Image 1: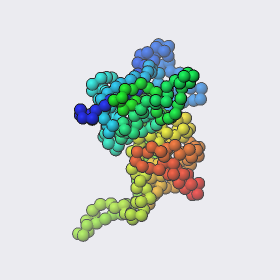
Image 2: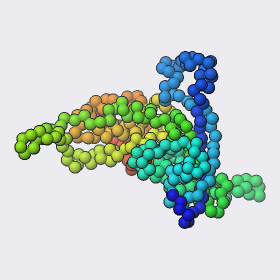
Image 3: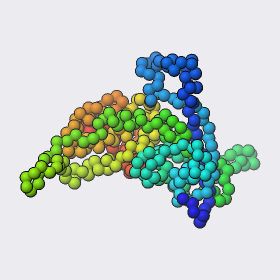
Image 4: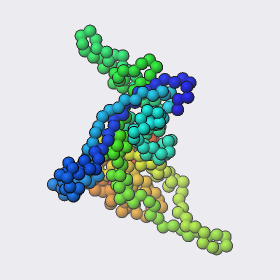
Amino acid sequence: MADGSNVTTVTVKVNRFTPRAERERDRARGGSPFARRKSPFGGSSDAPARRRPRGRQWVQEYTVPARPEDTVLDCLLTIKRTIDPTLAFRYSCGHGMCGSDAVAINGTPNLLCTATLKDWAKRPNPLAEADDDGFRHTGDADATDSPTDDTSLGVIELAPLPGFPVQRDLIADIDPMLDQIRKLKPYLQAQGTLATTTEGKVDVFEYLQHPEELAKYEQLSNCIACGVCEGSCPVFAGGDAFIGPAALIWASRFVNDSRDTQAMARMDAIDTADGVAACQSVRACTRQCPRGIDVGEEMWQIVAKVRER
Ligand code: SF4
Ligand code: FES
């Protein structure tokens, strides 16, 4: 974080959200906590994918000292420690390994801890001044017309991860994605080989594999379930219609694992209307995967595999 050398500032605009308190929600339902509205389509109107949290929304602007190589997470921690302890965001490892801090940065899903200010802060657009005729030029689509001074790195806009219900400020409820991944049994189902020691004693179960077989799924096993691909996918953003690219990546990871004995059952499980059939090959999921997985290409591969089986 900024240590005094080479320090400028950055302005962070955060889409904030405070949910309505439980008691207020019950009052809005008619005073009774049992008076839950029924969905005309069956199921509960409180189903996570359909739930639209109610509460207060506003945009809050903070300006903090920062250096170009600082991450967006560094800035949020500075804000939380020195300006506004009520700002809510989630993170854990701080270096792109846990996937807990996915948000929309300038409208694009990404991780707070790996996005740097030099890559994401938008400088003011000098062409966005009104000319003599009163018209505004919009020369550079990536620039912003927000006011910043000469020492500022620019402006960063933050919002919760799209496609998921927001819980508070930058914290989205990613349970719908984790539930979909869980449904597809994201663990190895294999027949192990009993290995014995030189004395003939039982040692361990071995799950043997050649390096070429490992190469078929190794990259896929790097998925950290951050939800960035889901937040980028316009079909997943529609709610229940699609199990989402992250769940399909996890299915594909085990379908491509030569040790797994359930490849057919796994492909049956995703050969559904809300499974591979719902993928529209938009490939928006590919662009920002923080683990370098070519999600769009992998989607295409697993769809082809399911159809050919
Ligand atoms: S495939 Fe990439 S973007 Fe999608 S959940 Fe996994 S790590 Fe995140
Ligand atoms: S905090 Fe763990 S991936 Fe960013």
